[in-house]
Image (cartoon, rainbow, N blue to C red; front, side, top):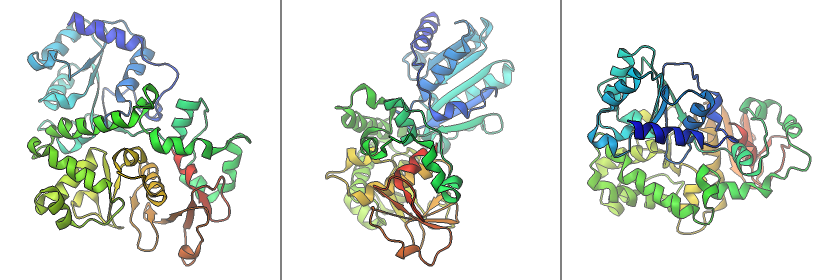
Length: 397
């Protein structure tokens, strides 16, 4: 244990102090059991280390353990946590819990036995579909950390600290958004860079190798994280990667299940399940028509890649502007709102607001007979009439 505690102290001490993800301020850190899920590379580990650093507790009272350490291949998490508690432990942070086979039952037992021990854990976004027998939902608060918004990118990369904008403000007071930004702010001087490499915080480590590293991250998610999915045969990982690649060359598109089955060798009866797995892993986004829930596992109306960085990594050719715009809009809106395919426009948000996405010359013809409808334009700096700039939707969180 001493070696793990020493490693914990080192990681906490050197965690970055100058930037915190949006979710940090939204978490109720007083709750005794907190779960944080999210895709790999979004910054879950860093956020928890920052929180521990802020707590500034003695090493014996607060510890960070990553469950993908070799230690846990032959040592019990429960025994380690019990010993930590008996030595005065008060806060236990467990990273990558999905790498420990009996994680949910172990956490439940620790929670029930030690009523003054706070437990915070992180795991893959696929946790929701790999629930084990021990149901933690009645005990914990669960959050999901998404990738960086355009607003966060501006703070992280350019040290420009700007407030969030609500969808309500964009709808009812669009002109007021001008007052938020400095007069010299030129959003399109930064927006294209964000679309290519601004979603995952690790881009700062190596921008030149960013897309290669993102490709490796995709393989790790499919070949290792998906091993935790009940009913997924890891021997099919290659087929899953083929499915993702085929989808990436065509997004956004209305899927032809038989065609996808023919191209990947996956049985047509399994395609919807595999697409859902990729959705839960936050590699693709399944868009359904109004009134349809993702939980139904029906065939989606359209398939998008989850974010624009994945689009530039996986596409054989430079993605079309129309595709990039739609992927960005869907990605940023779906963090806080329900987004569906609309019959007459590109998207309907929260089942009542309609948006058509296009370039600077896009007209209002398509929405002229609709209430609560807007044109979202690329290359437009600030709102004009019923036209809203695409980049502004990157300031929702």
